[in-house]
Amino acid sequence: MAKAKAAGKKAAKKAMTKSQFVAHLADKSGLTKKQVDGLLAEVVSTVTDQLKAAGKFVFPGLARITRTYKEAKKGGEVKKNPLNGKEYTTKDKPAHYRVRINPIKAIKTALA
View 1 (cartoon, rainbow, N blue to C red):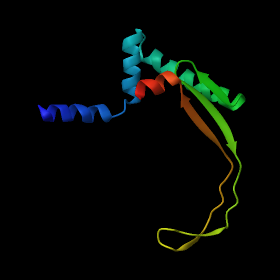
View 2 (view 1 turned 120 degrees about the horizontal axis):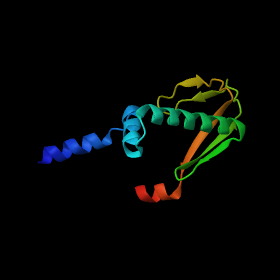
View 3 (view 1 turned 135 degrees about the vertical axis):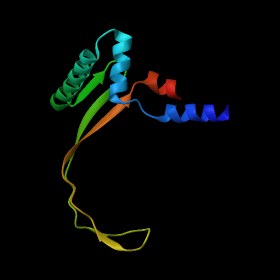
View 4 (view 1 turned 90 degrees about the horizontal axis):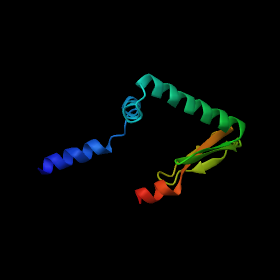
């Protein structure tokens, strides 16, 4: 019996795959898998467009997604590795966008 519980816990640790998620949504909503897949593609497209245009997107009942711009950092600084004492030269970091996803309070409290 202990092995069955342990096996159940291992199965719960695996994340749901996209095809499993699509099948689950199709089953719950009554739509076909193809329709759900198209809907998910449209959601991704809408979120991407909104992040490019406005820099933020609120997914109602789920999360707030924000985009921030990070400036380029010049490298060339010589530093010492605290683990082994060797010196190294830092590399340049290009400018990039950082995307943050903050869940709503209801999700945070449900997981606490």
